[in-house]
Image (tube, rainbow, N blue to C red; front, side):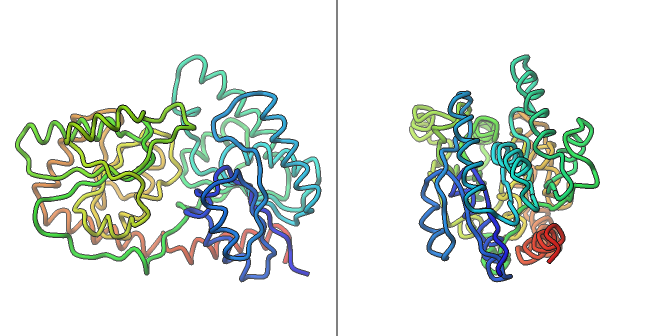
Length: 376
């Protein structure tokens, strides 16, 4: 009989962009694959591949105790009904709720993907520190078992949770990101003409979007000839999102070109000369930096966990301090003025992607983990 694998993830769109190749690899490798998530635009794509989707009432940032309790019971009920041999839990709430449910039900194998620890582990105000203590305790309950592998995308997150006693070091595995299709994300020569600097991410404050806009203003004030593209949407479900009024102001100001959500990232980067992500969000390994490397584009990003793990500092990218628009403008200006240096960094980025980030390699690593946990 085919072994039953259940993915639990917050957002169906995130699953399609970050985990669908893994689900397809598992299906082709002999697993019966199910996905549980909140409803969304990604559901149709999931079901179009013959994968059964189960709707959950998960919210990414909600903290209503009653709703969260009902969500946990929903996951528990789904696992009891499906009886999966293996569950793969992605992002914090599914890892915590799904990990506890799997423990209660005696699910045979658990994979927990920690793709960044987020704002809770990067902010230092009193309220967030209190929440961090509760979340760490919840991780400890969810991740204390034998038939478990916790996959981290960077060593900083792994070290933080192992030091906190949330997971045993011998239950962890480091996998740098969710991979990229190197046939789609091709390394093409930079375009000629006025240089293009591109930011592509959800428009959250902690992604560094305001620093990006401020750096663009500084460079334009210095007379630097370049275009700054801002690709991404606001995230109304996230209290840290930029507002529609702020986006409208950027459009009216004209310092940056606001593109909205884009699915054609490979084409967007092919038309760019430099990719910038000044994030201080608490990333795993940002997919946009992996995609930039695959496209052979030099990068400017922050000296933060996840961001610095996605690049080779000085070789494929320049690192700047977080929340520092002045340093960001300086680094972007340096690379705009040196096409040859950008070219060398882009070539090194493509080599890094071929060495570390090919999606086939990432899928094969996960399948090995699956089989070792359930002994097939």
